[in-house]
Image (cartoon, rainbow over all chains, first blue to last red; front, side, top):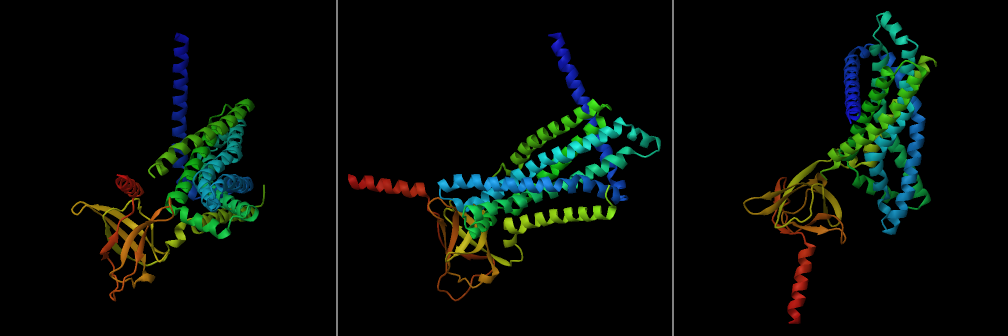
Length: 260
Length: 155
């Protein structure tokens, strides 16, 4: 019994100190944002590796998710003779939920894990301490540009995901299943509100980008500097990002769409 | 590591395509385009019961959508429902004896305001009021009346 209580107390203490370190780390990142403006080239490089390299996986997944949504939605809707509302169904589920969430998960898997591994390895090979020796702040130089790049890329990737998904859904719905093209778009436009649906989706994706880049960078920076430590940190990044994205999605959905 | 200028190009392409995606969502997918650059004027109608009418419900005349409901309030003095509608300025010649009624699109569809033009020569002005209104038909009420009536007839 005492052993159990001791274990419980210890794990609580460990997780709280980790949370504290992570919050302090976030403050340090944010403090570096202004000095990043003086060096846009660092940001550009990270936008390339975080955003551009995730472009392909996001667009292809978006296309297939939209196509599957259209196919599945059609089978259910046609039972009620409501095939014309396929456009609203595809667009609403993509813009509100699947766009931000699935691209957030893909982003955590594709870019987040790479960030953790990169920073963890930098720490393991003592590049970060080397920088400190040369009086270069590794957080300002290495971490902040990656964080800002993640924050900028995520809403763009989520918007792309939704847009490509809707086009994919239109291709399958109107091309293959024979839903009327005009009804598809007009029902969609009547059913989707810019502020309630699209802007809320953008806010969601911003939050997910913030959280998953924060987790990825912190896990990398906090990793035990051995090859095993880095590999564990990478796993933790993907698992924790996925949990936080899905959990936050529920909370955000309840806050944004709960009143309707 | 790629040359910086090609990297620049790719980043530029990425950002541009993201913005195009957002723009596509805003203009093609949502109803934003139907709000842009439309002048409108406001008219008010008082209903004894506005039923399931909601803000943003369509306002149509002769089956054509000409505006939207912008506000629904309860008047504490007259116990009526005050419905404000914004009508596209293109249709500014509605006569001042226009009738407003609340209809339902289909059996289970959403409710909308239908305007029937009258015969007067003076048009409705901005912030004008429609005097003749017909309340929403509440299905339960109508059904109840029908059942009550048929029970009466059997006696």
